[in-house]
Length: 65
Picture 1 (tube, one colour):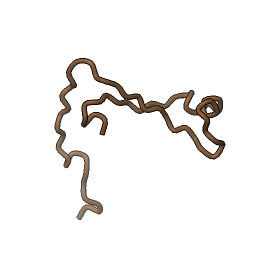
Picture 2: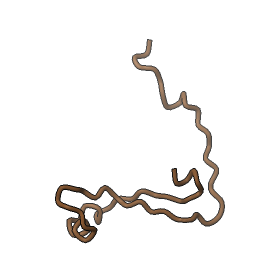
Picture 3: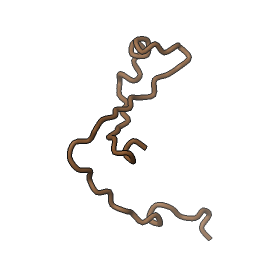
Picture 4: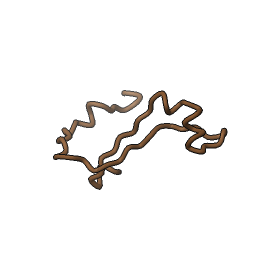
């Protein structure tokens, strides 16, 4: 959704995501877990062209008859 309106975005996880001290500092109660970080920003330069891939290369009917 961010990319669709011209905002750069990336979802990241890493060791800090699972660090109890990070959850504590963010004020999360013990019943909640941090899933990752969503970085948003204004892209610099022009966006790369995304190739259109044939959907049939990635999906098939199941069960195949």
